[in-house]
Amino acid sequence: MHSPIHLIRQAELRAPLALLRARAAPVGEILVRSGLPERLQEPGSGFVPARRLLDFLRGGALTLEMEDFTFRAVLQAPDSQVGSWGERIGRCWRLRDALHCLCLQIPEDAPFDELGVSYADDYAWLWRRRHLPPKNPHAERQGEQYVFAAMLRALRTAAGLSWTPPAVRAESADSDWLLRTDAFSESAAHFGGDVIAIAVPYDLLDLRLPRATPTDPVPAGEELPAAATDLAGLLQQALTPLLGVEHLSLDLAAEIAETSARSLRRWLQEERTSFRAVLERILFEAAEERLREPTLSIADISAELGYANEANFTRAFKRWTGEAPNAYRHRRCLH
Image (cartoon, rainbow, N blue to C red; front, side, top):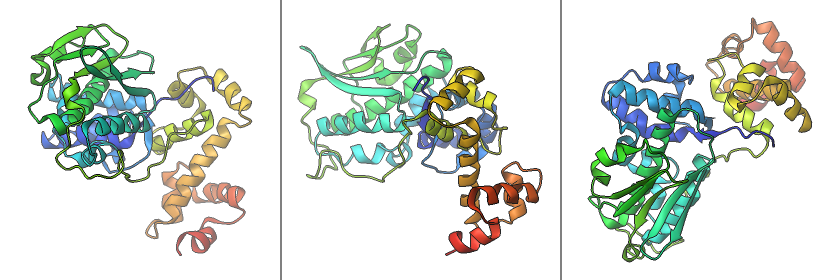
């Protein structure tokens, strides 16, 4: 695959959305300004384009005039509002198990993140390496805050809510927000590395978590869809949440893939598919989902999917399935 499309699971919006609502911020406007649909205020387990979600986090920080907006949102949120990892880490047996869980789960929600634990003479280091080329440092700093908060939450499950790390490392020299945050105000800070990291004293690793149960090191949780591994699948996952918000064009797809339309078309051909095939899969799956809602008419669905009229939608649907939408609905969707 030539150009990975960077995605973040929609669940990562929960904590920032909660803080914005608590401050009576115009959440819908911030989403739209970031190129995301207002309907993302509702819970979901799919993915959205990473750059746009990071732009949303930056928009939240600017709206609230809160430099550490994302850090504060993730650190303060209930376990159920922080991605796929929040509730799982608290059920682990020991801190080292919780860190293992975090290192597995964060890359499930943000596949361009790599997490691990390294062991040095002085401390163990919980670290994150980002495989997302730098583009907007202000937006990416909010993403950095998300991971720092996730790491600190995991560590504090055993060390206590007031625990502060002896040392931290940041990728950017501009990450001095760390020094102005109470959680790291007493930490030795190092800037300009290739990872972000938190030092963990060795005597913490085998601490038992307060809510621990002696089960598997990583407790089972809700099975969530994984990010695709092929370009066409990634493109479908990235564009699906934008349906009804923007015209799903080849140019938009190329923008999200951070390449040219010509290159994207060639790369899809190498996977023996095309942008039109990707678009039709998006439209068909969206149509099928909406056909399961008995209150939606065929006219409503065709308009929502961007068709000029019901007849055009019906012709397209017959091409996909061999039957009209109403017949398909009664045979497949309403039973």
